Image (cartoon, rainbow, N blue to C red; front, top):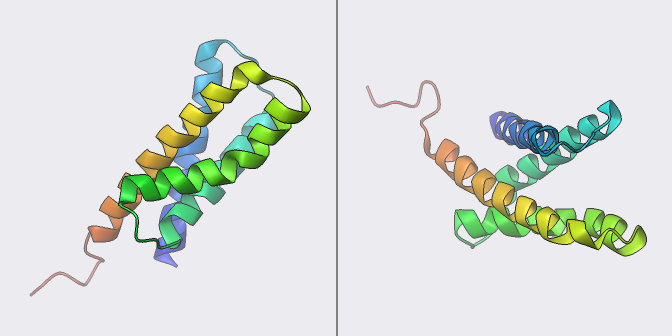
Length: 118
C-alpha cells in the first residue's frame, strides 16, 4: 500500500508542476484541464513506482512517462494539428519521467518505519 501512495504522491507533485508550467508560460488552463493533468501524472507516478524493469531508474521513469504520453501527443499533434506542442510535450514527459524515476528509486531505498536495526 505504501508503494502505491508514494507513486500517487510523486505523480501529484508532477501534475501540479505541469500546471505551474502552464501558468508561468501565460497559457490559460481550465480547472478541468488542470485536474486532468494532475490525475494523469498521478497515474504516471504510480506506474513508475510499481512497475519494475531492468533499466536504470532515470531511463525507467523516462520511458514509462514517454510511453504513457503518446496518446496525448497523438491527440494534440496528430488530430488537432498543434505541431508546435510536440517538442514541449516530449521534453516535459521525459524530464518529469526522469525525475519521477529518480525520486521513486530514492524513496524505495529509505527504511520503512520499524525496519531500522536495533
